[in-house]
Image (spheres, rainbow, N blue to C red):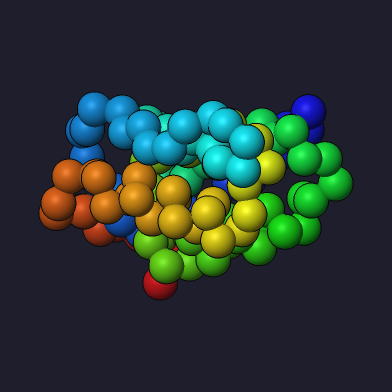
Length: 110
């Protein structure tokens, strides 16, 4: 098992929401949980069964955050060898389940 942590500045906070869970932990799949997080950042914690793919994870989560620019969210990922395409799909599914009307964070980088 390998654990990875990333933190990105964000621009759009969903406000209060109930945690979102998509996917399942199984061979070639993963689960993604989004929870409210204090602060202007988006944290992403990954537990994966596939060791040594840190640079690929970094590219995938960086792309996700570049597209969504989320703030005030903690993302937890439990992975069982999902491909980058499946990871991106699950992250996008989780983001789509957030309540509408993301609020811009004042003073956030553009």
